Amino acid sequence: MNKFLGVAPRHPGLWQDAPNQAMSKKTNTDIITMVSHTQGRNELKAICAQLARLSQQGRWIVLVSPPNIGYKNMLAAAGVRMDRILLVHAKDEVETLWAMEKALTSGTSSAVITWTNELDTRDNRRLQLVAKSAQAEGIIIENANSHLPDSSINTHDNVYGQGSLFTAMH
Image (cartoon, rainbow, N blue to C red):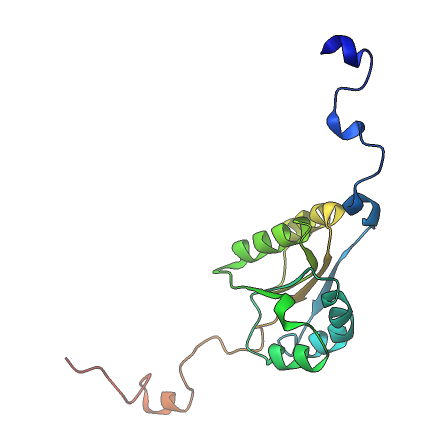
């Protein structure tokens, strides 16, 4: 076999005459970060037309940890193919960013939208590195849950000095 190859390059990827379709379509994509005060509702409305166009390509539009803001109705009203929407519910911030990274680099997605808290410099750097090999549009909606109160106890009930007027009976 070595006699047949002679001085030809040993890597099989170099033997192809036509460039890979995914590589020829690859453009330098950046991951866009949007700070939200509406849980991403306004930001999602702003990109709905672009998502509708991307959904017609037959690849996934991935939504990572979206809050309950009526995104299904917004996307459907904008003409997004709902059979191309993939929901990912992550348990924490680390899993959220990991899911975004995998969806961006998988080659099966056309857009990845992630709802998260404010990113630190380490996470921003990690996403800059991911953007170099991303094959989809990436959007991060930061501070999506910053408007929510710190405590889930109703402040009206705190007037009476107790968390709730109802207790469990055994």
